[in-house]
Image (cartoon, rainbow, N blue to C red; front, side, top):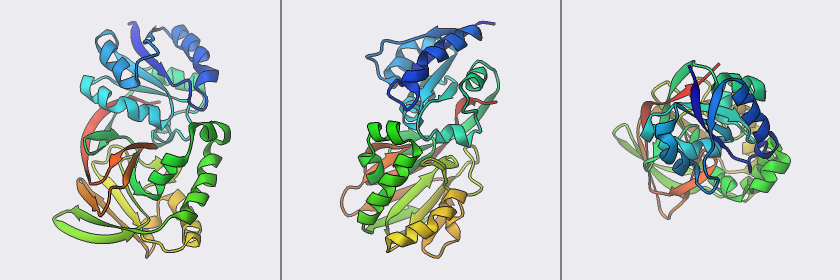
Length: 287
């Protein structure tokens, strides 16, 4: 049976320019008929235009490229294959997909699918984590050039600088029938497990567990963040006294003034924010 795939490679991603021709050649060798869109189209526009011609969408890039495809994938109910060619590749990490390109292409040309949930913030889909506060400032200030040059190290260097300049802000949370006033440096709402180059939103988080994992960093000093880093890597930050953590399926956030919302490393709007969950909204090819 012939496979027809829409191939969307972000040539500006960390490894996209270097590996796109290799990806094309190896996909064709694996028996995949490739549709390559007009490069002037956005990822969503390309999926909308070619949805009727293909049976899967292959996205080569990082989490920002996958985020750009999410709404169109849901709209057309097309399955997603991932070539992890970005900097952090956190959705690929969550799904335990191979980083090696030939192995990733074998998965993309395969037939094993996993249905995963998708988080929604103000009707915009996200796969990994959406956040307000410190990490939104990080996403806004971390340039594509620095990500390409420094990789995950670029996240760490920028994070230390921005965190030392960050100040707590007030927000109001509504969830599970209650309203809370919170002073925080960051509120994160996770759908998947990993974000930010390998940080874990919760130690038992999964992209198909039917819940959002929420945590708020209610810290006062930059050195507290340094002490918290090992827990953030493990997803155990919810055990800390100055971290509020809970599961939810819906959540509303209000702030005194508009704050940027970061979803999968992209700024997608400002507060107020309503978070919700779409169960098994996207099917992904897995190994």
